[in-house]
Length: 312
Image (cartoon, rainbow, N blue to C red; front, side, top):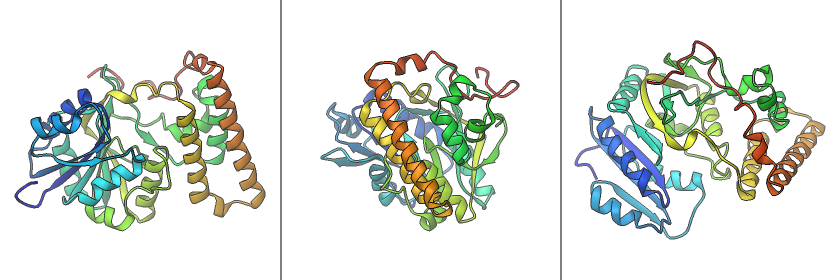
């Protein structure tokens, strides 16, 4: 624990991933030098010796260890409950922050009191931009995405409204929603909106958090001058049946929490039916190994021509 009240608390949830966690932890200390940083690592029942290695190589890190695996929102909330900093960061264990990146994000938040949360620009390991900005989905966008329209017609306007391919990642700018891959929240904002909703699986809990932040009048920002490499985000890979179920469960939770009250009973039943059909189709594709064919289609929306998508 730091000797004085930390300026920044960083929460990293990990499980059997020491090879990524070590460079992630090293990058935190290289990335933030403008104040006191507190790092909390929530080990979600690792069996590869992660806890012992953290204690050996990073004795300054506060460890929370789980004896059973717990859902993603729960583990992050464990870290949030222990955080003491005036800013709190949720950080994936497969992210490497550029030197000084957190200095820039915290400085931006210090200078912009209306900003409740901010994220550095994410890069793939090859240096290309990894899109992290989203807009809140409409029913049309959800339907188009369910029909794989973003794969067959990457430039379509319906899913484009959600994936936000028009965002220029070379510019610092406000956003409706940014993933919690490397997400810094002002404590005052966090105390107003609360942590992650534990009724969600890993999917959509970040979208819900951004929604609550905007609902309270706070802004969410992308800080382009700060960069971080996210190894795990270049491809989502093929989902297991459990991952597919969690994704659709998150989709249903998001709809029911944020949209259902403004829709008719008929619309709500149709959406429920649509989510069930979507899960059934995706599960069938997975069982028949046909989901692999989707990976040969265009990858969907990416930053358009002239965007900051070159190697850096």
